[in-house]
Image (cartoon, rainbow, N blue to C red; front, side, top):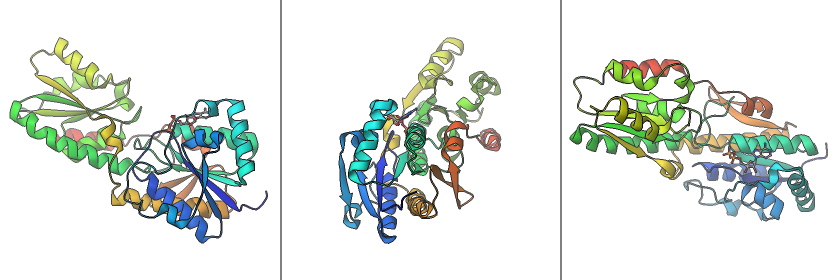
Length: 326
Ligand code: ADP
């Protein structure tokens, strides 16, 4: 393998708070180790369109506290085609980029894996998604911030829920993973979480109603993961209106506000550690791995493992939630 001189960096797919901290860390760690850095705008789309600029340390000044991504992000259909990826490879050669750091979620790392194997090109992935659904890392960049945002929102909804004696379904993001719903429920003292991981095993709504909402309470808050597997908050509310009309049910969908905001200390630190680790990985000759965090230790997770495996939810947390909502 030819020596790596220039590292390209991009953010792709859904944005997540802390991506900027990661961009800053990769850029500065790379420059510290003597590499050149090129910032690629709008993910794989910018790669194909040659939307690329040289990054110096100043390009990443004053961004650690900002949500979103200064490199912008995009979804790119063209990159899912052989021709699109071929074009991306030509741009990479033309720009003199020798390795890529891709910050994104499951889809972005799937694209990275495909590209890396087709062109025998070194790529290091950083898990950037609020969903926390990548296997091989305890946490993804953005997850903690989104969790805190959810907690903040639920606290406010609880005030009004209590005043009106209602049942609230609050829908949170997470795609097909229940991490945000389950941990958000615990953090905000919600009565229950309805998550895709166990939707096929039990009828969580029926169980919830049968167990009876806490008798001593006059309102209930249930967090629902957005997945079609759970039916989403709207679907569940419909069911309650039909099957349990005695409940006065309301729905709040938190939506994109979960994606925004200044990253928490935890996300900034995680992103900074992972960004530095991405450069270390390249220095060590690693390629086609995602940087993971396993019990506070940095680990290298092959793309094939990170994207193909379902990350299990801690079922002990479900039990904790159940106990705390009596
Ligand atoms: P996320 O990274 O947040 O999961 P997406 O699933 O939208 O977001 O993926 C981001 C981009 O990654 C897609 O727009 C596409 O360009 C690329 N991508 C996703 N899956 C593939 C694939 N199987 N092959 C090539 N590129 C892919």
